[in-house]
Image (cartoon, rainbow, N blue to C red; front, side, top):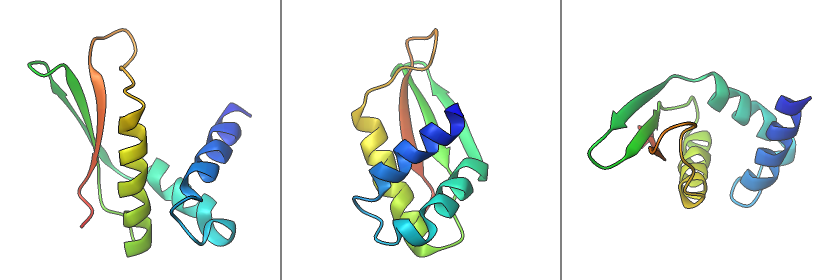
Length: 92
């Protein structure tokens, strides 16, 4: 139930910049959740870089870029560390 609520909240967030949210928004989110990502600690700058790999569609990659911007604005720290999460994407 918790995962569904998180997915629903993210769906509401991406609806601001992803026009086909009603049609395939949940599919885009599932692709984001299941895609590869690199977690790179940067101890000097107190960051944990989460670099998401490219997705299957251009519009999904654009949604990921926008989502990264919004998530970075939350200034969230990785649990039990002093590392700020920094979301990035390989998407072009």
